[in-house]
Each structure stands twice: as C-alpha cells, then as structure tokens.
Image (tube, rainbow, N blue to C red; front, side, top):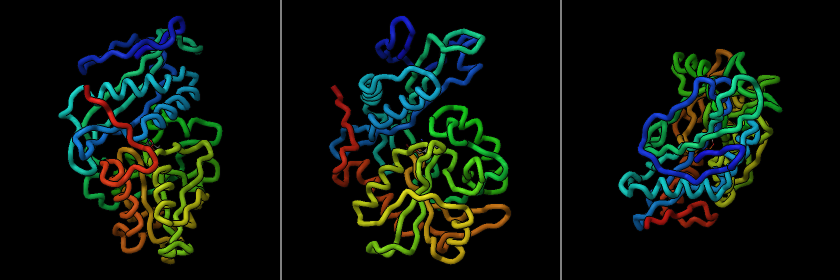
Length: 331
Ligand code: PMP
C-alpha cells in the first residue's frame, strides 16, 4: 500500500515475496521514518482463521506513525490488507496451540530527499510467516539483566512508538546481556534509572503475595507514561486477570523493590508478555552485579493460568467474551 501527498492512500496489492527497490536518498534511510506492528492470526477449531485484535494494532500503528510525522493508515485499509494476506493460503496457518501466522506491517518514508522535511511518499508493506512463540513452545523461564548506563527511552521521546530506531537502540545492550548468559534486557527509566519499564520487545508484570484476591496475590505492571509500548498483550493480561478475580494495578515499581521483593519472598512471580513471546515467566533478574530468583525459579501458577487463558481465547477454545478475535472470510 502506498501513500503520496497528491493521492493519499492507494489500494493494496498482493505481490510475490521479494526485494523492494529504494532510492539511496529514500528518507527512511537517512532520517529513520520507519514504524511497524506485529500481530497474529490463529487457526480456529472450525478450521477458519482469526486475527487477534487487528483494529487495536491498526490504531497503534497510526499513533506510532503520527509521532514520526507520517500519515495514519485508515483502520479499514489495514484490516483489509491483513485479512487478504491471511486468506491467501489456507495452509500456512499452523494448527498447534501457541503457533500462529505472524503479520508484520512496516511503513517507511520512500521519497528521495536529502534534507529534513516531510516526506511526500510512503510505503506500507505487510509480511506474513508462520511462527512459534519466540522463546519456544515450552515457555521455559527466561533471565533478564538491567540495562546499566544505557537508556532506551525518556519522557517526551519516542519510547511509546513502535519505531525501528528503538530496536536499534536495544541491540548493543541486548548483545552484551546475551554474552553474559541472559535472555533479555530489562530497561529502567531514562532519568533516574530506577523505575522498571519493559524488555526490548515485551511488557513486564509482577505477582506480589500481599493481595486480598482469592489466592492472596496482587498483579502489577508499570504504567504507560510515554516511555513503554502500550502492549496489546499487556491489556489482555490486565483484563484476563480481572476476569479471574486477581487484583491488578498499573503501578510504578523500582528495581530495588523487585530485588528486595524476590529475596524476601513477597514478590513471587515475574513474567513478560508480547505478541511474539505470548506470556513467558522470568525466573531470574540481575542488576548492578547482584542477582535474584523469583520463587524457585520455575514458572509460577499465576503466570501459567493467565497464559493458558490467553492462548485458549486465541485458539477459540475459551469463549472470546471481549471480542478480540476477528474471523477472516476465506471466499
Ligand atoms: N514493548 C515493546 C518494546 C515491544 O516491541 C512490544 C511488542 N510489540 C511490546 C512491548 C508488547 O506489545 P504487544 O503485546 O502489543 O505485542
């Protein structure tokens, strides 16, 4: 799908997978106007396919685009393009729980122009490919390490946008964490480096043993204050937890509180969530050379319950009471 200043959005067209031609002066290459989404389509028990919360992904792509001075794609056009892609081939949507067809809409500024001003040309491409959950189908606990001196986002910056540059900012720090044996970076806030924010591609949750809920637990996640991606999985987890009678709060949490909570046993579980990873337990966290384990380091019951509920809705096994699935007609 293309956009031009003269004609606005064009219709979508489906093309065989292959390279796209860009002018070396294309503005995306020089000024970084590149935003994307990641969403999934799931096989349903009746054999049909359903996209998971596609309109929410369309709206978030619009917000990311706006932040980078790019045009917003109409939600209907986004939905049509996704549905068309999913319906292309009935065989490429996997059947196993946790598996899905992953869609990656990517929008870039294509006008050839050296000099900073608004681009007059954009292109949005939608890629699709079958995937497993990105840390594997067994959801084994991952380990995370805080980001040290590096910062991913500050208030007023672009941390909430799903723009490519944010992931470039993560790569070096992630490589260093991986070299020390961790699976992911736990980003702290950009000002005090004290408040827990998110992982490079996932939001985080904490399960505290101090609530009035049926299990005596309380679930918290850092609030969205412009520096983290407003995860759609995060929103699902908050909703499902409320459905299950678990007390939830969007609450600022310090890394010192996390380390102390894990050691004292008050913080019993941590997990990360996102479209690609689904819901994955965090077994161990390290900060400033010290490390702490949640519970016995294995997946806790609250994480498992929430993930199972989430996966069952995605695969049409549990009723979709919140209207998250959008069936794709195959005609
Ligand atoms: N944070 C970041 C930085 C991400 O890239 C993602 C993935 N989009 C998320 C959180 C989780 O978002 P979602 O649940 O919508 O996939």
